[in-house]
Image (cartoon, rainbow, N blue to C red):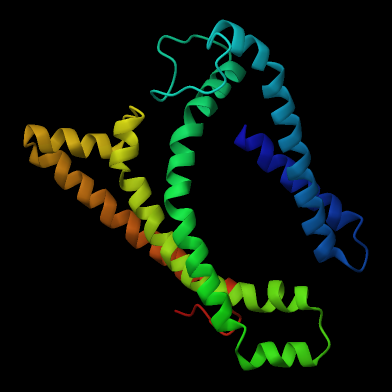
Length: 223
């Protein structure tokens, strides 16, 4: 499935390059985005074709699964298994999102208000740019830098294990492994948990540094 999506994006970009004329770069981007959106719609449509079968035979009309990562002993085709995984992901994903959305909103508001008072924002407005262009293309990108730092740390913690979420929704992940190791006083899984957590945080902080250079042209990644 991932290979199919990648092939479609490449084909969309190639089409934009072949027929882009003198303005190839935006055409390549437009072709790739259009191809990605198209294949995504096709996949969603194919999954939804199997929703009736999944709802009738697996969940008995219940739209959202509440416990576990999948339905026990489910032996079905790829599309039914995909719907089963998705339905089990809805509630834990929603819980994890709601935990962070309030703090992200506050950080984003404070950072954007600080950026809007910078000199280059006044210069952009003096040039006659629309308020939407000033906010979205100039202010919002720089305001995302503190949010990127927070998200990088949160992603590291998320991958290392969301203990409460995994416990409530009966997901067997890093958080559950850590809790079981603590109960059994097993040192090796605990050391492995902290090792994976440290590596994940380091990797995402490295990626955040790269994202900084994409958000703010004044930042350069050099060796």
